[in-house]
Length: 143
Image (cartoon, rainbow, N blue to C red; front, side, top):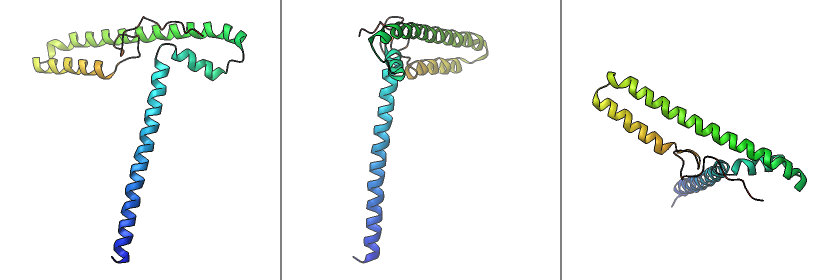
């Protein structure tokens, strides 16, 4: 083989190795971010996250701060639940309003899209539409 062919093969090999390594790194980072989001969204995730952010100093501070964070967590879950219910009601209202103006196939397309959105946009655990049924708010996290 002449030097030109060797140079091209080395260049292509380097490009291939770089692409594989780059894709692997991006995949690992993406998976790590997804896991962090899932941990935050789950029951008690907000409380644990905020405790790490705050950097609780001792058990006395934890005893005061933890119940406040749990109350905020319950309020946040209730807001999410209410918002999700309101969005579903709004979509249902839109369907009723559009129904007289759409052909049967158009209405069916819209209903199919709604089902697709429900599957695609699963909410956090514990909320209607979430990956698994839980109480309306996460249980208190025992320490």
